[in-house]
Image (cartoon, rainbow, N blue to C red):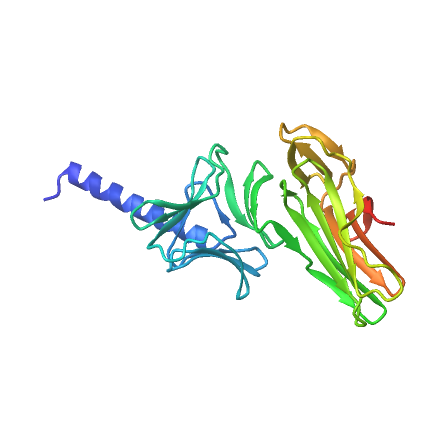
Length: 288
């Protein structure tokens, strides 16, 4: 006969088991690791559009993939896998089978942060709607056209996505005739948001090498983040969360488009806030 104490312990064990199983399943079926959720060996989470996957592999490595291409990893291959957990202190940590930490995001103290695989190609840690950590450190061009006469490429910073100090968005446009332009929008550690451009193979113009196409003029501030806010405004905050520059625009669905464009006799690098329909709202930086 099972006494009440034994039954209670048995019921509690079952409850904890099914709760843990449910948590693991929830982590596997979404793009997010919430506080306390973890990935065991062989488990993964996938971006909302299905194009990116964060996998904790059997070799002990945590890897962000786009298709079969690895975009970033924790460089922990060769360790005996344990789990990857989003801790309550805000730190994302890879533990081996002996519960020894093998890698961490270095974001402890950011209590309540979550990890999310974003459609812009990054694994990001997000706290109260703001990105506090992101890898890889650059976003590449995602769409565009190229013909013999014109070329363009664009990449986007969507609502609640941010550039942290040293991070950039990179786009490259080319013509079928060989001319190309590479544009880089970078949030520098000095607090300035700068657009750089380099050209190659132009026959009638001197090629540019990391030329400045525009900037927000916020150097000398303690860098915090350059964020496309959920209210539709693009704002640069310093490390004390003080707004240092703002586009002063608002609208649900706004995002920042970073583009490179060129033709046989012209080229440009630009960053512009666009609305949900793709229409221009306000130019942030442009070489024109």
